[in-house]
Image 1 (cartoon, rainbow, N blue to C red):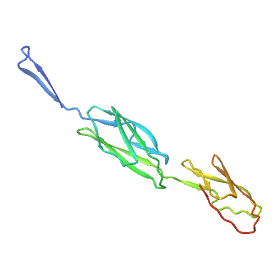
Image 2 (cartoon, helix red, strand yellow):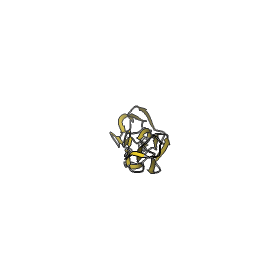
Image 3 (tube, one colour):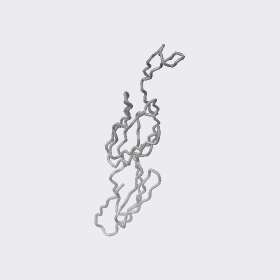
Image 4 (spheres, rainbow, N blue to C red):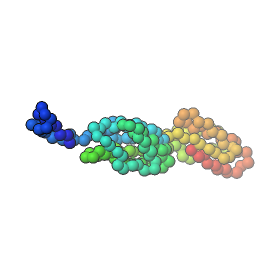
Length: 171
């Protein structure tokens, strides 16, 4: 609220007075933020004609830092397959705005979850589709593997003892 007054020459008498009410406003550069499963950092610019504050903070997987009229949001990696959703609020004396944060869950698909080889061994290639960086491990000495982008090449050595063998390659 602002008051405007015009005084006479003596500066003692008010001959005109008017009160102005200027509404607060608060805006953000992006009110809906989306992150992939790997997380990341985003910057939100806040525009306002009034003093503002963060009125509701985020969960532990989101880290919010304010520097003047910018907010820096760091989102941790999502190790769950479930999507995460959170929000925070910014407010002035009379206005409030909500910023929503969504993060996708981890997804990983292999083109063939089970591979079978005859006693001669051999090689097969499967496709791995994922929304995050992946790796694989195998704890046996008769399976070798290599990764080339989204392809997992698996090579099995010959089985010369006539006993069935099984192992797991973890992706």
